[in-house]
Length: 168
Image (cartoon, rainbow, N blue to C red; front, top):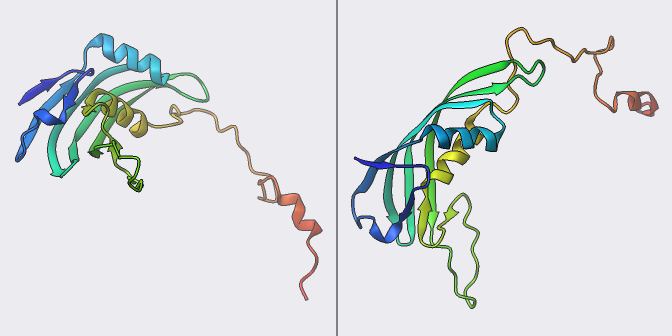
């Protein structure tokens, strides 16, 4: 099993034509501190991913694996620390991005383009962490600042219902 760091760039030309490259991406304390700053977390206490990179088709490579992280964010109401353990299944496809000018450009869908012929494993793992973490963390016991009106119609256009003409 190969070991990767957060700055790992995998040149697809070095990948085996059959089989897979299996490895583990681990992060240093400094890298986790940089990610916490980047995403506005209080801390990233642990972050790692077990990855399998395999050629899927001509000009396409799949990265599959499992990400695990322990993070601490601030509660959106109180600012208190909220700890979270994140487990996320990674399923990404990377494709060659170069297209001659005379060819039709096809939407790649969910596929990511290669960057200079490389898969940026660190950036992929960082983005997966950001997508899988709770977007608006709330601490237990945080006050609920939203209160429904007496009529239960709390949406901004509730008052327009009185202007509605009666149906015939």
